[in-house]
Length: 102
Image 1: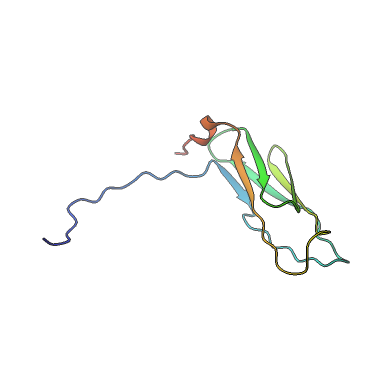
Image 2: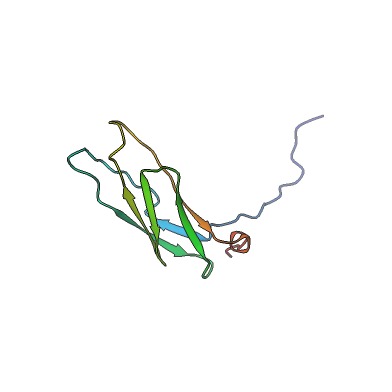
């Protein structure tokens, strides 16, 4: 028996409903120079949906507006070194999560 493809099936792709710019932030800080808050622009790609922003680290504070997320950094309890955190944009409902972009 040979390993021969007999059919190629194209699977549908799901594009994200929200687009964040920038999609990555790199911050340099020191005890005498804390980082300034940063703003991430958020665009709804498939029409208006209700969404929220969550952070996975206590030292990241996020505040969501209608078309942006403000990210603040509390470095007071952090040791020196490299720290990584993730801000996630999430739909408020399962219906919004299931929305597909054309």
